[in-house]
Length: 166
Image (cartoon, rainbow, N blue to C red):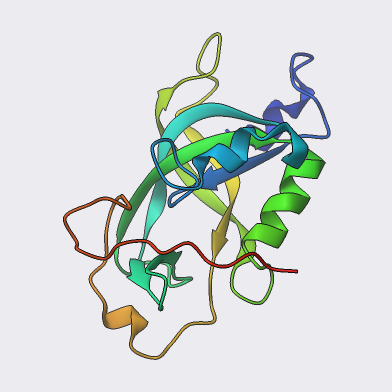
C-alpha cells in the first residue's frame, strides 16, 4: 500500500507530500533543524524506513555531501526517515537541495521499519519522494556505498556546510 493512498484518510491533509530523507536532514544530523523551522513550512516525522531497492549512497564533493545516486539495483538498501511535509516545506527543500541542478525529486518504494507517527502503522510498504541525483562525477559510482548516513560517522568525511545560496 502506498502512503500516498492514505491521503483519503480524514486525519491527513491532501496538501501534504511524503518525503524520504537519508542524509543531513535526518534526526541527529546537521540540517535536521531545517525540517522544523516554521519559517520553512511544516514537517511531521512518520516512520523509519529503508529503500525497497538498492541504491549507491555515497559521500562526495568538496563538502562531503551524501548523494543517493539514481542507479537502482546497485549499492545497498538505504536507511532513512519518512516525513509528511506541506507545500511550503517542499518548496523550501527543493530550493535547499538545488532541484533540479544537484538533486532531482523522484518517487521511491520503501519498506517501513518502525511507524513513529501516532496511531496504527498504515503499511509495511510505502512510497515517498526522495532527493536523488543522476548528475554526478564519473567516479562516484565507484565510491564506497553506505546503507546509512551519519555526518559524524567513522567514514572520516566531515560534512562541510555549503554557503547560503541566493
